[in-house]
Length: 325
Image (cartoon, rainbow, N blue to C red; front, side, top):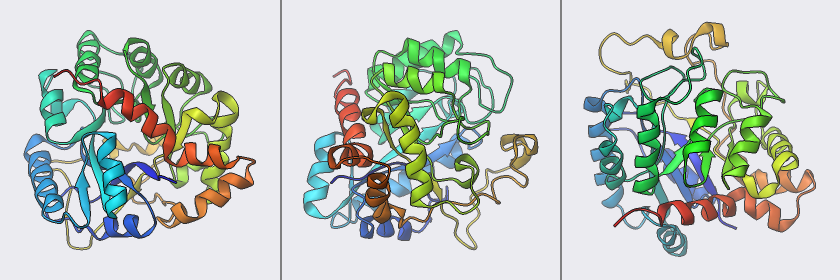
């Protein structure tokens, strides 16, 4: 039973501990997509993180394997390794150059979305004025499709996501998002967005973050309830998991350099308070409890396997295999 974690966050620092990755391995996770930057992080911060993570992962082949194709995940699973890909959250690091997408893909970025909460020249963020996908954004979607990178719509406002899903030639995912019908929050997505994602052949991956689940102490049972909602709406073939666990490390400052304003990126008006410090995450060990929690919603063994990883495997096989030679 393959387990696919669509989004997780170590501190964005070259010296961040890999101890959480070992915990993923111990919990039976086979693939984890690791964030390497957001719109508020300049390239001067992102590139050293990418360089360090790549070097340290490849230096431990008994534990980790960097992924380019789905076959790499199967090989890692057989060898007892944790397969790793990277994701980029926002288009600002692309510096308005579509050709940057292919460069990040060569560095191991396997999925990306275009706006982190706030608007930019490519797309609109979920905590900003609706603007839709721009002309540059349409070129960026083409670049993501051409590079064989998963097109992600997390953190992006409704109009932009619908534009992206209409524009993309390949299935689109929400790597960590929850149904608005179950928890009222600007980061959550409407039934219209969920249906549009499924229509592309894509997958909505449920987050384990407290505010997005509508609970202060998130559990595997809470996550399973959100999975069940999406499955009832569009079918079990279009729902997965992206628990979005954020790890911190005492003494390690991963804030962007310069005059960084957390209140801009995570506005109090959207229910954040002091940035995201008050957020709570489902325990990483939720991965052990999720099969039983999903079964308790009425899912059979095939459906449980689909949610835990098979759905994302299907989409990744289609998208990652589409890169132009």
